[in-house]
Every structure is written in structure tokens, then in C-alpha cells.
Length: 307
Ligand SMILES: C[S@@+](CC[C@H](N)C(=O)[O-])C[C@H]1O[C@@H](n2cnc3c(N)ncnc32)[C@H](O)[C@@H]1O
Image 1 (cartoon, rainbow, N blue to C red):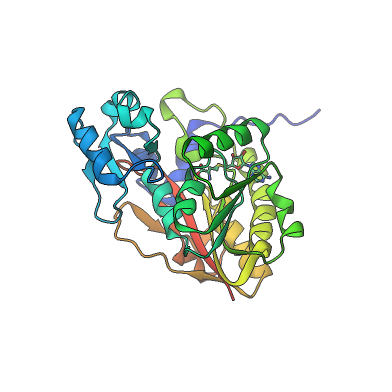
Image 2: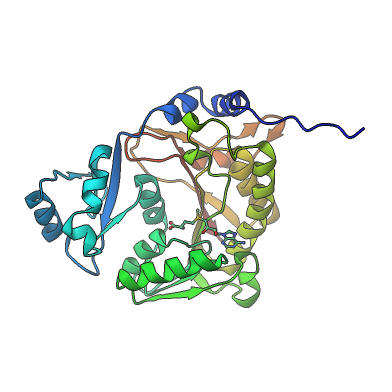
């Protein structure tokens, strides 16, 4: 008789998160208190948008580490979406972990950036303001067209879009890009709604994504020029999709080196160097996990240099 597969439970999920960080499940269970947004500087300057928002009754909270992003209480999200700067596409709602991760990639005015898993395109929009040009790759047709519309509406003119599978990009573009961002498709544990109970989460899903992520991280690294830097990121907590994927790259490519990520945030945790039976390189402690708090969503970032 075929063995019956045991269904994953909320308790399994909780146990895994607490093994990563004892506070993580609790932090994820707390209702979101704030959200954040960026000003689209292709359409407006920061001061004029803040002025308009104040006239419309908002008090956007500025941040010490970035000029173009602001925070508001979560109750004001609906009202912001109805505000005139939002209707004029002068505002892009994006969580602070994503904004920080995109800015953590070293990008200069003369650079060509590859965004290997790009839709809906929020991070490409940040690179487009800093780089000479951006190549944004997205295999899913409907997400691809939504992303194209996003770039058009945002007036981002230096982004080329490709409806392709990121796993094979390196074959057409070996060592072509100055900087690469891989915001990998993942099990999205950071967006798990604990009140709704266990729906789409399962360890099987984690293993399925880990396999794809290993192929994508190779493609990202092979597409990067020697001397360039890349970021591997996910919105999930599972070490199998994070540290294990980066560890796999480090083992395969001796010229892949982890770089420290500078920050002053308290809601973070350094990368794990072991998980369950697996030991990872001690270098993995240079990677960073954002714990969900305020306008920060759960996120994982590894910054990698190609020597
Ligand atoms: C986390 S989302 C990217 C979010 C985006 N970077 C942003 O900030 O707006 C991951 C994306 O990877 C795409 N994806 C899935 N499989 C892929 C593959 N084989 N190659 C490239 N992208 C893939 C998904 O469709 C999804 O749009």
C-alpha cells in the first residue's frame, strides 16, 4: 500500500521559523503596522510630492538612510492609493527590505544591470535611476506584460525587457553585466498569512524552489562580469532557499566571495552557518535576514563579488 504523505501543519511551520529565530513566528504573526513607498523621480521630485501629500493630509515619515522613500501607518494605505501623487504615478508602494536590497547592489551611472527575476519591476525601477541601462527578465507572460506597463507608466526609458527563463540567460550573455540582481522566485514565507492557517506552505514547496534557485544563481553568476557584484535575495526564511543556495554557489565557484552588507537595522539576523544536519561556510554569516517589523517585510540578502 502506498505510504500516505503527512500534510504540513501550522505547527511544523512555527517550529521551523523558531529554529531560525525564536522571535520570528511571533514577529510574522503581528499585524503589519506601517507601509512604505518610493517617489518616482522620473515623474516628480521628492520635495514636490511630499508637499502635495502634506496638503492632502498625510504626514510621510522620512528615513535616515534613504531620501526617496517614506513610511506611513498601514491604515492610510487605501487613502494613499487615492491620493493625487499616486494617481499621477509619482509614488510606488514597496516595502523597505526590498528598497534596501536594491540599493545594496553597487551600481554606477555607466553600468549595465541585469534583473534576472524582475516582475513586477520595483527593483528594476530603482536600478534604472542609478544605471546606464537595465535588462529585466521575466518568464511569466502575464507578469511580463504587467511589468512592461509598469515601466512605461513610470517613464523608465533605459529598461529592456525579456520574456525569458532566467536559468538560460547566461548562455546568451556570459560575463556581460556589471551588476546582477536575482530576486529569486521562492516559497514566499514572509507573506504567509498566519490567520488564514496553512494553505500553500509545505516543505516540498521549499525543496522545489531550492532546485530552481540553484539553477538561477548559477545563471546570475555566469552572466556577471569579473570584478562585478551581484545580490541574491528572497522573501522567504527557509535556509534551504537562502544560505544553502549561496553555499552551493561558493562551493562551485572559488571566485565567488561574499561581501559584508552595511546597515544599522535592529530587525535583522546574520546568515546561518548551520541548519539541521547541514553545515555551511562560515562566510554565510555575512548574509542578512530581515525580520518582519514596521514597513520591513521578511527578506534574505546575500551580496556576492566575482573575483
Ligand atoms: C520575487 S519575484 C520578483 C520581484 C521583483 N524583483 C520586484 O522587485 O518587483 C520573482 C519573480 O521570478 C519570476 N520567475 C519564476 N521563475 C523564473 C525563472 N525561471 N527565471 C526568471 N524569473 C522567474 C516569477 O514569475 C516572479 O515574477
